[in-house]
Length: 555
Image 1 (tube, rainbow, N blue to C red):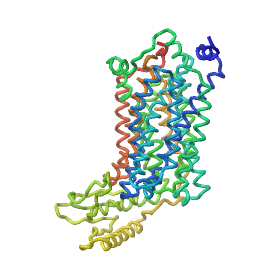
Image 2: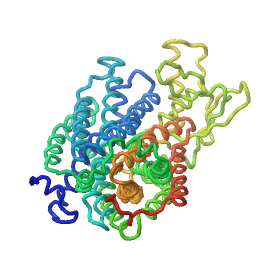
Image 3: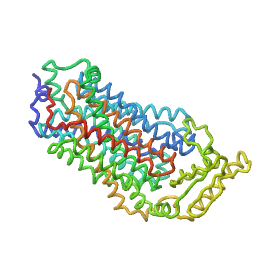
Image 4: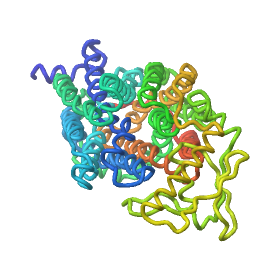
């Protein structure tokens, strides 16, 4: 037997140096992959202007979020393709391929021409690269988590795999740090014009480091043992999803674990960033800094809760995290508004905005191809308020009733173009929007958040609390998913529910939440999506899933 094979099949738990290499290489490589993936989400507002400039601003931002979500939508397919390869071909070789795909596609995003240069081909090319990223990530996580768990000593799987769980947050933090340094060095104007490409191009350096580290790894000892005993499978998909005993566990792990974990994860990290920058109008660099500091504070709790799950179980920690998130999201986000943009919070309380109109004249302002015109008095009012980040309620008037906007005690008649068309119509609309803007300003509504008034410690504290919820649901989940399935189908079976939960329920959260806000006018209404999903997971997981910390994994 060769030296490599002896190292690969060494008893689990022997050699702390080897275990450190396994955890470090798997974790560090995954950090770099998450860095690549999250650059897009962090820069969605800027990417809107470069790749979706042919549509109105609200539609453009939703389209940019949809392009972000496209990478998540494809993740279950990546889980199936690479999960199958991982169960047949091996864990190590499979996640070398996923890393290469991720790094190259991210580098290409940094080179893509803008909409102004090549028209509709620009957003199409962007979406294609996002799909490649998502496909690769669909195979990455299951491989890394399985690989580390299969090296972990008995009783320490939660602790060992918790280091993998830190990678998504550390990757996000790394992406924010690179963005922040680039922004600071170039200035906001140059960064928005072309400097945003630099963090994407840096990924080529990270790819080289990641590949070098992972080439030092050997195959999982549990996988090697299974193959040597002839217990492997050539049909992991059929065994995982065609056998009801296994399929039932897959479905329960989706609804009772990963679905709720995903919405808590993306609310606590991504939606919080969107909320600060897009809704509360904080400066981009300040938003990135606040979130980055909160991530630094919260990240050690991934390991703490992973370790704790080895002592008291995985399930209680995950379910409690979902329950706390569902119970406290609304007050936390309202608190963030109060401390990040106190002028906005005060204006909302003292001078609420009400749009009164015939419901038949109010459209849902999202147009996939960007050709619809939202020019009714109701639509003009709602579009301006949404763009300004102002919460409003809608009062349904009688059929044919005119539109009006009430700001506190002041009532403003709705937009009336008086039959104008073309440039005259645009001028009339701009004039009316100026009047509404003056009324909002007089009522105390700020055009953007005043950085000097931001209570930074309070905002960081609330953001850190959101991150701690993330660590509760995410820290123990890799170990639990690994322990739910046998070795022969583990990579495939655990990857699919994880990536449906995180790719679909989590990945579509920013898009769904922002669309709900745009439709209702309430800046907090998008939170109903994660609150309901997290609540469902707490109930289903609490009732129907058993804890797994004592389950054997060598079978």
